[in-house]
Structure formats: structure tokens, C-alpha cells
Length: 93
Image (cartoon, rainbow, N blue to C red; front, side, top):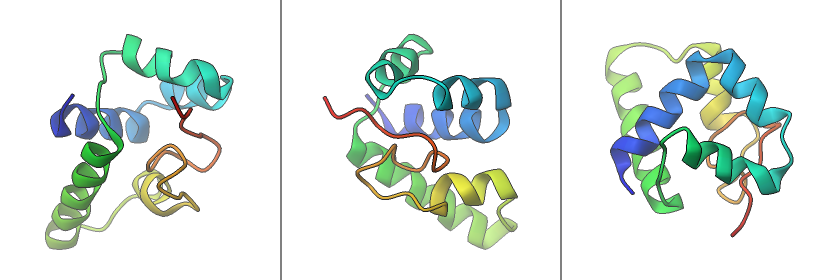
């Protein structure tokens, strides 16, 4: 598990529409398996740390694009899929 994995997952979700759609169209119980099968392994705490770093970087460099903004702030709570678009929810294990 790592912050790097959480950051890589964030980048993929905000840039890979097919992957994002796959997650959105999957039952919540299956999402963790898909995420882990794709090679991502991180805790909610690591996800939070990664998003803090992403926001800090965005504040100093550029504005967030629409996908990035939705991934971080689009109606998501920490109980949901920690920053994914609002249609995605983290299956609680």
C-alpha cells in the first residue's frame, strides 16, 4: 500500500475514461477487486494524503481540469470512493 499507488490511481481515473466508466458501471462489491487487479493498493489514509499533495501541486502550478476537480470535490465524502467521480463508491471491506 502506498501514497504513490493512490496518486497513480487518481491519475488513471482522471485521464482514462474507459477505466472510470468500468468502475462506474460495476457493483460496489466488485470495485475493490477491479482496482486491486489493476495494480492499485492503498488505504483511505494514503488516498487522503495523496489528494492533499495533488491539491497542493495544483494550487502552485495550474488550475484543476474538470475531471480532476470532479474527482476531488464532486460531491464526494471520505466514506465514498475517496475522490472518484460522484457515481463511484468505495466498497467498505
